[in-house]
Length: 504
Figure 1 (cartoon, rainbow, N blue to C red):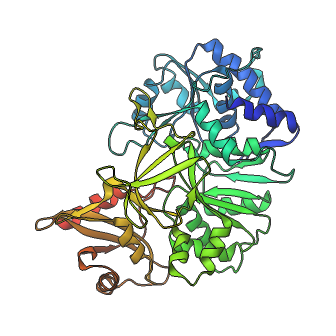
Figure 2: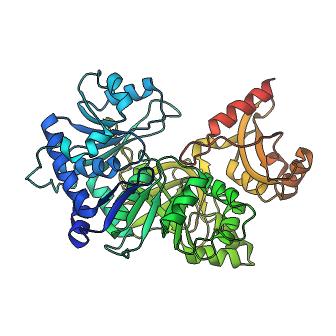
Figure 3: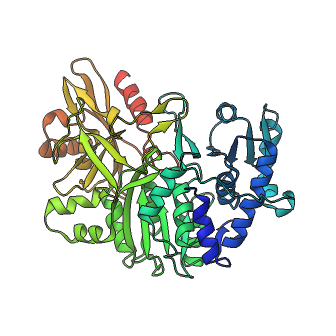
């Protein structure tokens, strides 16, 4: 197993079909050209004697070429976050040397001076003239070889390098994507960063299905809408914050006017009910899917599909309607359990930590080994619950639990109630220091456009729907909540700011 075999199959079936188009420059590659590009660049990487291929740039044609080049050359692919500081990037780069570095031209003088770094700017890497030879021998089919190293965000310490072997990525694709299932005119719009697992999964799944990918290097709602319309995009993936901005950009319109958009997947964070309801009205011809996964699981492990979206939206039964904010059910070949702090498997509706098991699950970090247990279960550190039909509901990170006077409170449970209030667009609940209870409940809320939030009224609203211990003792109204570029709520930023308010 090697991810190169996915490209080999598609380039053999559709050699002249467009594979990738840079949405900024308009430059394109066919599947045959992508295959040949990987072949020649693999020779260059081998000649450099590098042990990693590092990509440090926005999404462009160099991204898929780098991913498949590394697979052919037999070295791990390491995409780095180009939004980090120079010092942070250098620290990560030094952990993966000797490295062949594909990056922006302006970064080469500084990063090229580091030991054991062979740099090339993206334009030259993509240019065929920069690569004189092609690799004549084929790639390794050892499923245990490392395909990708992805660094975690490192918000609670030194970033860890998650290890994804070829067997994990190929297993995910073979169980979730049908080969050559895309029509000639199908196009996918990819706007997630290349250093995110969703970006890698988008490349592999689009390639295996034979779909044309249009890349949006830097997201804005207006650019997304323009590209979706001009390329008649048929499928796309966004994170919740992106979808919220797209919906806001279409404010006042009764329809997005994109009948060609057959499917829209979203994931990477919690989706507010109000956003998905508005989106489904603006995109009436579009099938919506919510995908939940992690870097360590090779992307998606659970999906709420189009039929479940429609059923939940139309339901009068509140339990079924609530599934619209779930992440659906486990994919075939994937098992999910909810466990308490002692490792006991919990029943429907009980909140605990999400555990997952399956062929696509790695759960391994470079230099640290695997964190899966003896039976192959991976602790996600995400908190959640499942209903009686196996629909999974996310409740934030397991470490985000608020311990108030010995009682464990779920921030996600309180946020769900806040988001049902007609004046609230977004909400974040965190624990803050409390002299009497150890931790108290605090919330930052964002008003809907044209609405004003009455804090006392909103606190009373929570009290009507939950026990008094869950009512935020501190509540601030903000213009927006802090999210990273992949749609993750920066809860630590919210916590720090609200904790300051308590102290002051």
